[in-house]
Image (tube, rainbow, N blue to C red; front, side):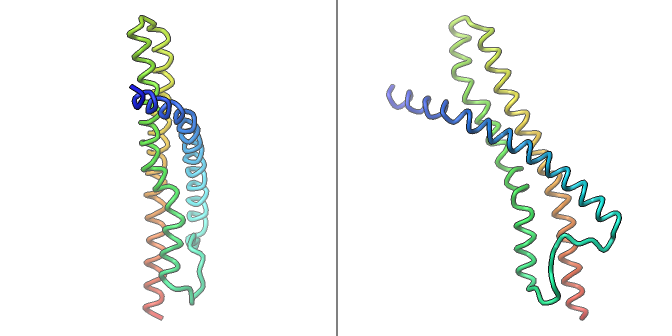
Length: 154
């Protein structure tokens, strides 16, 4: 009983930090889409646009690391956000089920609504991040291949 109560307290303590991270992740996903659209506009206006900053003597390994650094936040958001959404859903379920058992259906409904809102935002953030990651990865890899080819022909 003591162990179960301790786990329950820890889980409840995680709820607000997790919901905060879900909210921040959603805001970051929206910001990333804006940045992606701005980059798309720059690429459309100037076909010579390159997101990879380099000089002719920049090692290819350093450019590859630059690609990873630029993509890593989106990749992590796409993978971690659904997990945070699951936590945001599961933590309130225990108290909500206790409310249902006690005949307090309205209170349980309010808890369920909040829990599901957290998972919806987390999944939306993950979906946005996945799209932004995929598009940016394609652009950056195309640039990297072009740089490699230009160095091989030089």
